[in-house]
Amino acid sequence: MARKTTPAPAAPGQSEERAKSKKIGALRALWPFVTPYKRLVAAALAALICTALISLALPLAVRRVVDNFDTEDAHILDQYFAAALGIAALLAIGTGLRYMLVTRLGERVVADIRKAVFDRVIGMSPAFYEQVMTGEVLSRITTDTTLLLSVIGSSVSIALRNILIFLGGLILMLLTSAKLTGLVLLLVPAVLVPILVLGRKLRVLSRENQDWIAASSGNASEALSAVQTVQAYTHEAASRAQFSHVTERSYDAAQRRIKTRAVMTVIVIFLVFAGIVGVLWIGAWDVRAGDMTQGALVQFVIYAVMVAGGVAALSEIWGELQRAAGATERLVELLQTEDTVQDAAQGRALPEPVQGRILFEDVSFAYPARPLTRALDHVSLTIEPGETVAFVGPSGAGKTTIIQLLLRFYDPVQGRITLDGVDLAELRREDFRRAVALVPQDPVIFAASARENIRFGRPDASDAEVEAAAEAAAAHAFITALPEGYDSYLGERGVMLSGGQKQRIAIARAILRDTPVLLLDEATSALDAESERAVQAAVDRLSRGRTTLIVAHRLATVKKADRIVVLDQGRIVASGPHDALVAEDGLYARLARLQFTDGMAAE
Image 1 (spheres, one colour):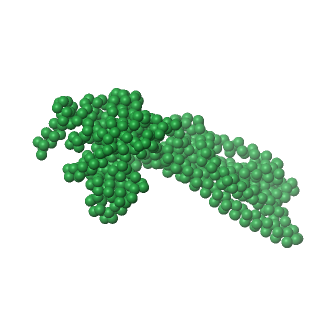
Image 2 (image 1 turned 120 degrees about the horizontal axis):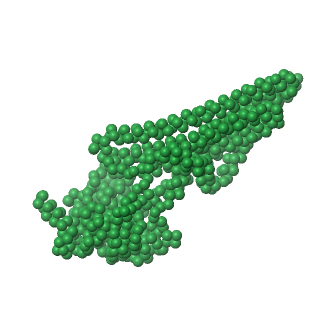
């Protein structure tokens, strides 16, 4: 099973260096996605501040209740209890409102991020996917954004609330007892050291864990997309072992992250609450000495617990923010990846109507993955409007590269390609591709109905036009034989269809698109003799009046072409009609003898 090489997760040292450069500041990249919802942010912050202030008011009410246990006026005690109950009700309402607003904000921002990442990667040229597996991209869109959702929709608001509780509680502690507060502050350095030291290690482990998760997703995506080949070659055990290995590496990284975070949590919580016990012990002696009331001590302890809880929560959330920073880095990498193919800043308009005159001017090209091997080498070629030109030659001669450059999936390293006299590099890709229809060598069938698969060529086409295109592509008969006819679901990648049926669906799609330029890349390679004859007749009709480029190995399909261009090792070695090329006794003649003479002998 052929597979692309995916960069392995970075070694811990590499991840640490990278994390040091960005740290938690990587989360700043999320701000552009938050700013469009400033009102929602403001409302959420208002609810958050209100709940924090209400929380800080509760100990004051408790102090009044404790200090008035012995009062002779029972109505005063009732009023304090009623006030405490009212504060609790306000806290409940505010907390619910905060949850609703913050969660809504998180869902909205993450949805925007997912759309932005998908919008980016769906337009990337094929060179991008030579380096990155689609499974890894999907992992970033799903796993990483899910992590961001938990952070934006929960952790950030909890962190802000705990910061307010910490600061407000600290101030009120100071007002309640400066002596006891001073003792508490002595514990702060002891708490911060493990947070800073272990937090750095946690960030590195989080990034490593997410890298292995992405590798696991990419491995599974590749194996499942080629499941028939895996099974045909009895490669299931090896695929299971490979996926198990990557998944276990992900699990091991997660275990290290979990252990580090657990150790940090244990240390921080123990230090905080040990300090509280010590302060409470000293405070109890102050009450016995008459230096403070019981209510004041209870109030101080509650504030101390709130401050300690805030610190403990912040240590937990710090780990979540570290993970979110790693996820943000990975998403930002996708959003900031520069495509090797760029539209011109001021794209020129394609002359209307499109005539279909194509010109290759001294074009040379090498694929990014093989920069030293030229797929095309100084190719110059003029194709007139309405002309049908076929490209033939051995495998690797550069035939499909012609199609890919004409669609501007790549840019030439030298020379230029023009359409109706305009350099493709000066046109917006979206504009000139509307003038082109493609039937690829490996037809793509979407997980939809037969009707929707054909309508992909022109979304506004009527049902009658879809069926007419299917008729022209010799696809109508087998489509109507399906259980639900044109509304039959074809399965993922068209698993319900044969190779020839998939190709006829793809041809029908191109017929429906009805463009001035038609590109056929081995369009009849998967057809049986009868279907090929029917489709060839449809292609002949379709190519009339439009510029048609045909890539073919089977020379029988190109004999009627106006011109046949013979390629070998990226160069044009011959050009002309079929009979003239056969008479030259060159590469084309040898290919023709192999196919026609040997084929007839075999029959």
